[in-house]
Amino acid sequence: MGKRRNGRANRAQVACLVFIALLALLSCGREPGRSAAAAAPSQTTPPAVPTPPPVDRALDDRFAFIAGLPPASPSYLSWQEEPSWKDFAGRIGEAWADFDSSILEPLRIWAGKDLGEAREKTTTLFYPFGGPDFVTASALFPDAATMVLIGLEPVGNLPDFARSSAKERGDFFNDLGALTSGFLKHGYFITMHMLDTYSLGHVDGALPVIGFFLKRGGYSVVDVRRLAPDQKGEWKNVPYAPLMKRPRRPYGVRIDCLPPGGSSLRSVYYFSCDVENPTFPPGSPLFRFFEGLGNLTTFVKAGSYLLHYETFSNLRGFILDRSLFVLQDDTAVPYRYFKRGGWEVTLFGKYTTPVKDFSNVEQKDLREAYEDPLENVLPLPFHFGYRWRSQIENLLLAKRPSRAYKVPVAR
Image (cartoon, rainbow, N blue to C red; front, side, top):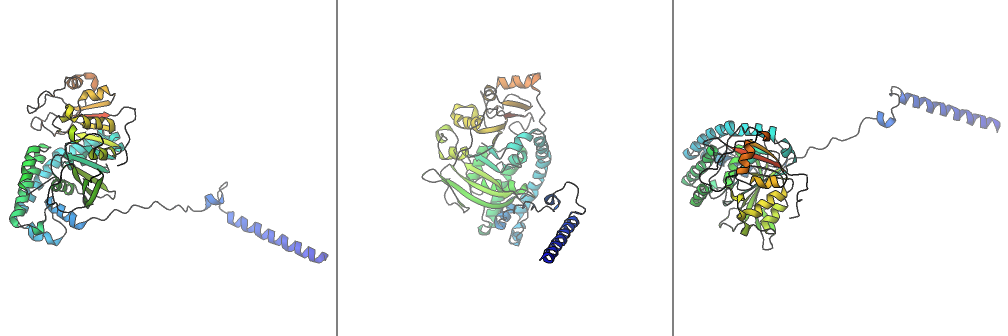
């Protein structure tokens, strides 16, 4: 029995020595003080890159053709040879190149330098009275996930080129050329001119004009959907289809798109609506929709001074309650509301008397602020708006005071 116990003990000692030797081999070359977990290679999986949603090639081609750019589909080849489209594409291409170099490029550089914090915190750009002016909004806030454009103009339809005659296509591009070239020259749309053009029916609303700006800006179209409130006031959206009859306002459209070279979806809304107090009361379907917008920056230019009047006090109150930042010229919220509310205001450009089309809207307090040497008024290296001839422009950037703004509500 003693020999057996000794043999078992010897075998146990050998096994222990072997185990110690294996541990020594495994730890050979390991840095002192590092645990086995630290020595093991990282098993962390890199975050997956989100897959961009698919582009709707048919819609994207139609938008490209509207913009005077050759679509990918060969079905457009014969229409590209029509004199009306070739003339439109040539003229608008030159006008766009000039607009891009003289207006957009300085604007982009300025915005990248002077709108840093506002850009960083903005997820929604709210653009009252902007009509279909997507191009200015996207140049100022290219990373905003949502842009909301508002105008009196109808949404309209995309042209169905396959069902159109050569003359109808020619009429469309003649009218679209007049609308867009006017904007590229002045930097804003004249509402009555737009409504006159839309009444002819060749370009029957804002949707083709927004499409023009999207494709000229290098965006790709993912989806287009119609929006309208139902009988309960809840907003419904349906896939794009031509409208035979113009709906009652308010109603809208949403264009989902991808920015140039990007994979993050952007949504561009356009609402045909009247935002005067009687048709824009708190609790109305459109007011509730806007209440659901988050991290809001409001932008207004060439706003006809409507926000100076009490008949637009509901919209003015909404902007002051909901905006983190407001970027505007003197045609928007009067300066006194920002000073009274404790907003941090930065002034750009130069203030001058409003153009003769508008009376009783001069702001003496804003003029005094621009003339105050302590205000440190900053330059504005681009021009747009009502004074495009004299090139005397102004912008104001207001940052909400530390008090909390009204948070988005469910819609």
